[in-house]
Image (tube, rainbow, N blue to C red):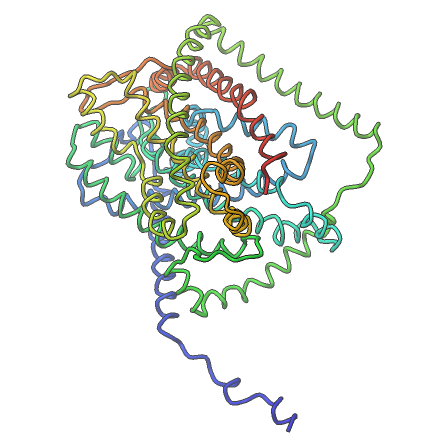
Amino acid sequence: MSSQRSFPGTGTLRRPVLRWIDLVVGGGLVVLLFGVIRLAPDLNVPFDVGSAPAEVSTDPEMLPYYALRSLLRMFIALACSLLFTFVFATAAARLPRARKVLLPILDILQSVPILGFLSVTVTAFIALFPNSLLGLEMASIFAIFTSQAWNMAFSFYYALVSQPKELDEAARLMRLTKWQRFWKLDVPAGMIPLVWNGMMSFGGGWFFLAASEAITVNNQSYALPGVGAYVASAVEKGELGNVGWAILAMAIMVIGVNFLFWRPLVAWAEKFRQEETPAADKPRSVVLDLLRRSSIPYGFGRALKPVARGLEVAARPFGIAEHPLRVPVLRRRVGDVLLWVLVGAAIGYGAWQAALFIQAGPGFGTFAEAAGLGAVTMIRVAVVMVLATLIWVPIGVWIGMNPKVSRLAQPVVQLLASFPANFLFPFVIAFFVASGISLDYGGVLLMALGAQWYILFNVIAGASAIPTDLNQAMQSFGVSGWQRWRRLILPAVFPAYVTGAITAAGGAWNASIVSEIVTYNQQTLTATGLGSYIAQATASGDMARVLVGVILMSVFVVGLNRLVWRRLYALAESRYAL
């Protein structure tokens, strides 16, 4: 009887039946593939710098095509940001000597305004791909990348350095290779904050879409087909009706991306939550449920297994994931000296060349003027941070710690955070003009529209990551009210808040460039500040003043990070890591 039971039954040899779910998933993949194939040739059409259009058509019928072009750029930039995050954050977390260089670089890169990148990269990419639109497309994608990558890298780095020691010791005892450790421990441990910050960074990319697609550098304007360039053209002409159509198209696009991409990712990332008591109400996604019930993702996974095994074998020469217990002092000091000599030589050479360039242009006296403007912008950034903290920390905790509220509020929050706030600038500017509010004060509101969501998103992520065990223990002990906030909630969300605050402050500085000088209906409003200084220098092609502005904005951002945020970050790592 036992031999009969072990023989494969008729069900085992039955041919797999194609189900309706497989047809739906397969149809979606075909549509996605067709869209990419249809759009890809348009990225590489002939391009002439002299006759390049400075604006795009504002016919609303073109919006669906523009929306798909913008969407393709956003996802290419997101893929590049994810690859950068994995490489950069892992190197900073696992290589102590590299960390001393990479973290300051990340600080500086985050502080460099997006227009500072565009000033250099547009010329370089156009020269790299002459007579092809691909160069301008690459410059636009790179600009979007710079608005996404830094926040994701910071969040993944923090997830790596705050891993529980028990998991780290287990990985070493199991003799995992570095490749195995990365995929079995590092990526799962950082998945939840990475998904949330990726969603937030994607929203940041939307914010800078207009600046990335309608580019003015060196007294030359370019416009790429996209929703951002459409809005820029409509705003320039004062066509509020067409701006409304663009807002509708953007809202549909943001809701679609959240429904088809981010919501399934948020629900899927819950499998990596580390706690003994599962959450009572986990995020759910209709799209993820369809994918899980379909056999197509499983088939793709099986087809890719040989590739994964090949990569694992190829990575074995990098060795196992452990560090030597003892490194000779002389060897360590020699390595440190060589590192700082190389870094010092590179910084010294770059500083010398920059000094010569500025001296040949406006001279060093322009630093004093730009520093005064930077102080004014810093006051606006401080006001934005204080108001955003007071408003969004309690709301973020309320959303993150209430699963039912979170399920209802998350789509709304994602929509608000992902929606490019500068699309609303024309209406806000019209209100400022009608009410007589100066942009010197109104600029705070415009900057807050682009920066505040980093704090809200990170606080929601931090509050939702509070272990259910701790929450239930507090309830069983009868701890409530302010004591519960002081003993559990504030310490638990503090690391996430600091991460959000650092990126929000950087985002506010960057947002100052598009908030301190705005054009509507051929009327330009300007606020006193470093952002308007950089924007005006970029548009006029005054590269020396652009360099001065970028240097000073980097000094302000990095200085504040070192004096304030980095100390809070260290405090979060040492005292409040769960």
